[in-house]
Figure 1 (cartoon, rainbow, N blue to C red):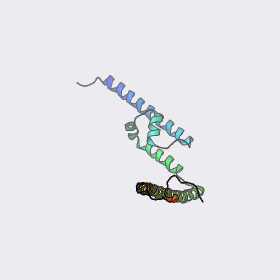
Figure 2 (tube, rainbow, N blue to C red; figure 1 turned 135 degrees about the vertical axis):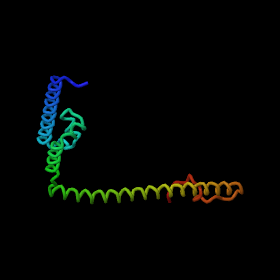
Figure 3 (cartoon, rainbow, N blue to C red; figure 1 turned 30 degrees about the vertical axis):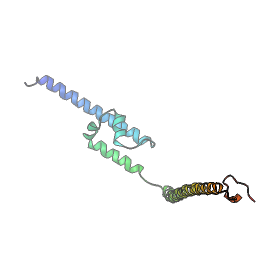
Figure 4 (cartoon, one colour; figure 1 turned 120 degrees about the horizontal axis):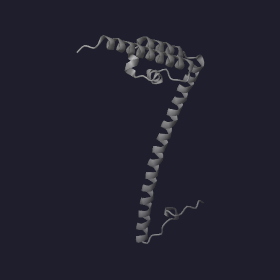
Length: 149
């Protein structure tokens, strides 16, 4: 069933007004994003600030182009940042090397502690055998002997 011509005109007028409001909302959001350098320049930021959906933003390629221009203008990297980035790379490399050395030392400590436990067990079994056979035990073999000479 066809619409009444008056209804058609009213709907077209409503759609036109809605499109204009959407465009104005996106342009206002673009202006806000461009004015505030701390705001991330992303499509999500734009359509959320405009109060519209991502699909609605995709219907306005010119708005997306302007967003890309704003993003490109913010990407400029200063020479100080290059120096900082190089220093950060060196620092990260040293940090990784230190972490590796720390891990290696921790593994060695764990291995040595297992070896010490094994030696203590062997020593105590030897002391027990010597006591069973009533042999004089050298003081160096007694585990509880912690005094230094």
